[in-house]
Length: 294
Ligand SMILES: NC(=O)c1ccc[n+]([C@@H]2O[C@H](COP(=O)([O-])OP(=O)(O)OC[C@H]3O[C@@H](n4cnc5c(N)ncnc54)[C@H](OP(=O)(O)O)[C@@H]3O)[C@@H](O)[C@H]2O)c1
Image (cartoon, rainbow, N blue to C red; front, side, top):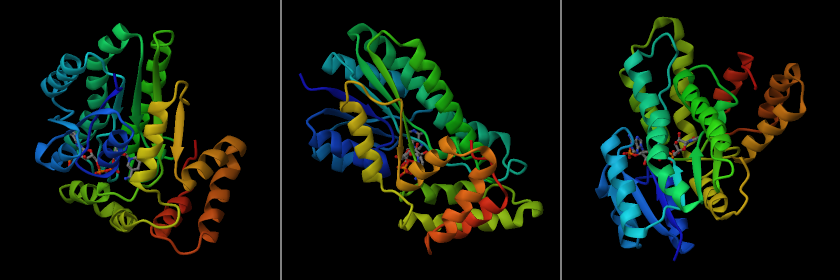
């Protein structure tokens, strides 16, 4: 029997491309989204589709039960659904932070809890959590988002230890900036944040963030992230973490090799020699704040 994968957030971006890649690779694919109408094209390509809002425990349980009933197995769970709540910590109200964590942290928690009994029973499975490079490089204006991705990273690391010896792998895929619709929602979610006068320059930078949507040097593609997910899912011995995108790999190497005091100056110099690229002003501004490189 072919392997079965369940993917969240397939209405656009990485999730949609990942579903296509798994289908092309012969997997049985359960592609899910909040709005099932967004999945018509994947349906036509042979995916099983379902409405799944990761904030709904009922949705999660219903879909996982359906996969197990129909296939008798669940070999890979891809927690891809997510969005970015940006804004200075002082301005973002708690309800919006809660909504951010409900999707980016509690969502994967729900799906993992629903999937694990089947994976443990079959003695195999791979859980792939899409985090973000921001969990290593938190930057001004990304507190809610990078906090949520750090939480998912930590939970993934703990889970990996818990399921060791049960045939289950837990993988973190951490992309750098990806050219997707993600940045449309970043903009939308900022509209009803009360823009405090103390952070005018930061709001200008956050608005500029939208320019990375068109791609360019240092920006990766949903195809690259989706291919990494597929490779990790196919591997008998996947790595614990996959960084995606040249700037992610460079950042991770710098963090691993250089002492803390040298990391920001080296990254700042790298941005200067990178030539003109979308988001360059954003990075210059961020590095001028001497942000932490973990
Ligand atoms: N783009 C980047 O620069 C970047 C960088 C690093 C990591 N990531 C991460 O990569 C993942 C995929 O993002 P992307 O770049 O492909 O952006 P995207 O095109 O906006 O895709 C995000 C997906 O998540 C879904 N989603 C949001 N809230 C949901 C909910 N409550 N329940 C179910 N699905 C929900 C969206 O569905 P709707 O259409 O229903 O909203 C959409 O399908 C996210 O976890 C994101 O944080 C993105």
